[in-house]
Length: 396
Image (cartoon, rainbow, N blue to C red):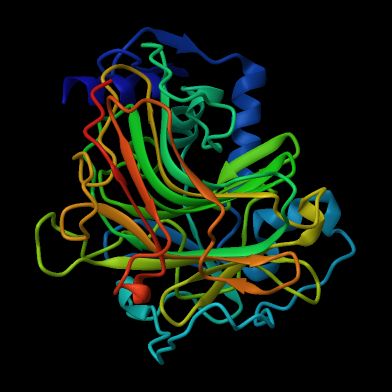
């Protein structure tokens, strides 16, 4: 409690106290230029709202006019027109559909935002200061620039993933059924389970993350992350972020129920990043009914298709030891006891669905803390498709 009050007091007077060892270090003063830049970013994120609503967890969201989203501030959007009800034409990735497309239960008002607006989470100056405090090492990324069994004790980032082999392939989409878990993390850490598509030097991520710095709690919550050119951000926190099309489903929603290790029933969420065949926009799909939640215009990326895909866990820690991944245990290949990603699928460069994805390799940068089992042909379990198990206690 003392640390929390110290943080608040320092923010009031223009300084921030950040921890890289035990959640607390020295104060840093903000220059006038830095303070003005923070205010500019806040204006970009917190656009004027038609009304303020609250989620069932108590978070405040502004119902922002569809065309006032931060992504429409991007220079490439000056002469573009989109309609908030537009939908991509690709419908082939999911084999099962449901009619449950109403996400009103996520909101205190039972509805969400008015038609023509989208829910944008309200962000404070302190929120941005926390996100900025860890620097570039904190930012999500792919595993390809890391080495196996890197025992460097100063590593802040760790991966346990299954990833495609070879950079000569082209991908127009990928999906996963992601087991929902709640790994334990500290204030200066995160543990994410995600789908990552590399698009040249850019990339997209989606899945869930336990990230107290981003969401101010320890619940697993949905997220997207965009890296486009020199800019990158979570959700819709900048002008290269995702454009929402739903008035009733927010980015950053808490996922419940989560799976309990050893229970007979596990819980999972369906996530997809799919490229529209007509206009090249990339779409986020969520849920069994493959609901289109939002999109990124094709102009965001210098390359038209993805060239690498990976599925699995990514953790970060500003101080040792590193956090849990998945259930926090080493894996043995059982769905009741391991975090998993099943029904791994891709859309190739010819827009054909590949549900086998036989050209993956497993990658773990440090097997002392995390493990992966990757299987694409389990006898008698074809319904699972390509499945991977991952996780570990960390403590590196």
